Amino acid sequence: MLVGYARVSSSGQSLDIQNEALAHAGCEKVFAEKMSGRSAKDRIELANALDFVREGDTLIVTRLDRLARSVGDLHRIIETLASKGVAFRCINQNGVDTDTSTGKLMLSILGAVAQFENDIRRERQLEGIAKAKADGRYKGRPATIDHKQVKALHQKGMGASAIAREMNIGRASVYRALAA
Image 1 (spheres, rainbow, N blue to C red):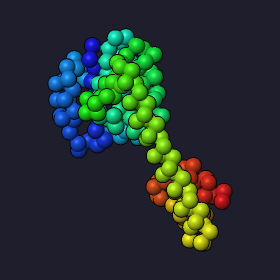
Image 2 (image 1 turned 90 degrees about the vertical axis):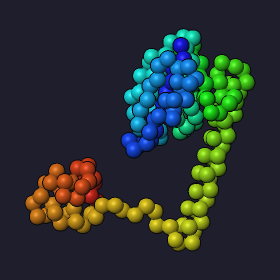
Image 3 (image 1 turned 60 degrees about the vertical axis):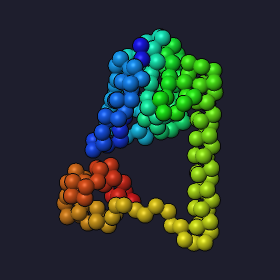
Image 4 (image 1 turned 180 degrees about the vertical axis):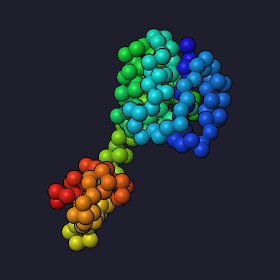
């Protein structure tokens, strides 16, 4: 069975183009959701699709980034599919098809390149931070909570929950500010 998965990041976006492409590819069932792709953990329809597929099925997406944004998530999803005997295919990125040896190789190469790019970006960022620190221009992430205000509200008799509501922060943040 061909099973499709479609995803857009926000409720204002349309799934129509992906749904049409998946139907054209022959998908008998399509799981679709409007959810950020940063992490695969919170995507209910993705979990439903992974639970639904059976040995011999193929999970199809229109583009790789619809399935996963991180190499780690991508590999975990592909491993889950492989352990169930389910193939994976990407419509708009020819060659990404785990039914073939070449497709498996392409997927591994794309994953490795993406990971390499991520590592290079992180190295550059760390180098930039080190240079800014050496030049005295880097002071770290600015505090988002005014500790003095938290303490002042507490001294006026407000409890942690009331302070949290007043400042639109979490109660744990209030306790950390009071302890600082």
